[in-house]
View 1 (cartoon, rainbow, N blue to C red):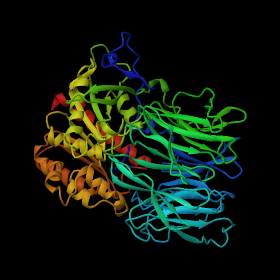
View 2: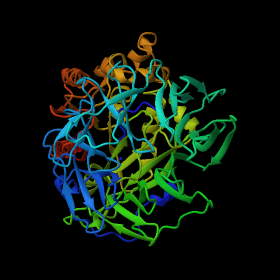
View 3: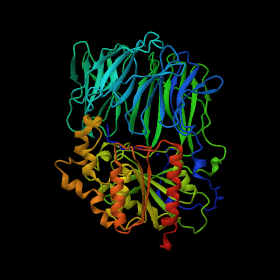
View 4: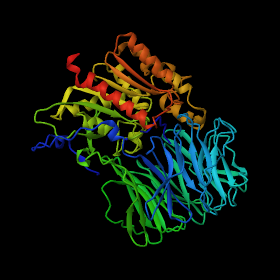
Length: 640
């Protein structure tokens, strides 16, 4: 597990010189508003109804996330929740009836509760403690129990609970709950056996190192399964159908995570599948017929579906261009839901029938107002940084560039620090590219997806080596004949926002402007005020970033707030008042300090948002303010 403040956006690898202007000029694209780019409908998640005629999913078509169901045969949608203030997300149908599990917090405070919504619309909050946070863990194999984790007993740790659901409780609205695992040492539940006997647990040691345990609930004893030397990650995925083996991901002895198995009776470990990239997840369909494996293939998701009995790959029919994500196989193993998306196309929901071998698109989330030919596809490029390390990045080049025209450029830095910018659809990026900005999304050292050495390369070097990767990106941009090298800005959210402020404070002459989404500016405060539910990960986080009680000088030196007197370039800050990770005071103070120096600063606060903005109108306002700022201070920089 890697500390993530936010996370944040084919396989073509281009040499630097292949990105030069085409011999033939393209027709300039039509220019669109951010409202039009955000008229796409964000959707996610999928759960089959018990009779497999409908799918439950989350949709933002009302302006904020609500829960919908869609009839697979007719394509008819039905809205099941009607929130206008707090985002509501779909988790699952009940196994044997049309009750649903949904989750929601208040104003982005991340105190997520789980609710049972009955067919009549009435709801029951399963979490009685208003201050407790909960996570849905799915259903028992026999469909009699609901599992969830909550920190109600101790805000530092998540206990695992089981709820009896094998009878209709819609009338009495009572859900008997039992403690399945009491977490007193920061060992987090990760997978549950089909017979409900075993619970696989994980413990973070550092952000590059973890352990895996097996708890036998009958004996109450837990066993370490991952004795190892050096750094290695262990992430339980699922148990075999007969519960004789635990399948898990690990990078032990490898740069990349692979799928392995552990035989519970003999203790034998066996490598099951590996790739020249990280395997992101793997799971087995209900009756063991199919195994699904997702691979992080150079900022794209590659899906493999195997027939478990033969090991043969399932060949899907011709589908729209893009990545397949969110694969979910129905209990009958006849149907599979999934999403397809790309940097030019938002998520769309599909269903595949294993028997007829036909796929059906259930949604069309792109607005008809935008010509898809006006959108820009991200290109994977690489450049060499200051110490010879190769840095991957995604390049978005505006269409219709005139001969000898030079455009302003903007670096896009992901959150994390261990996040990764991927080839997903981003209305914010497409909007900026459409308005004449070259975007280079940098996956600087410390990003996930490129091997554990690359992942660990920024440890205790934040604001230095990873910042130098961003500074060095200017040399790549300088090779592009359509980039104005005197007009390059830097933008990012959360940890990416920290990188923006670090660039302005520690490399003040490198970038013309900064765009900071809720970025850390005072590591001493942030690391002392992390949410209590991160307790099991705190030691690992301190090991990577620094312990504020021991490394105060180093953290002071990498905190932009204490070096704000060096900031000379304009920047804009966007902040949610309810953010529990990067408190508003972080942004308040850096804005005040920079303004005291006479630096032009725009500050946009959203009182009803947390860490990341979920409301459509707020996202529109944020992007409008950013474009206005960039047009004035970056595109129009020569007039300053």
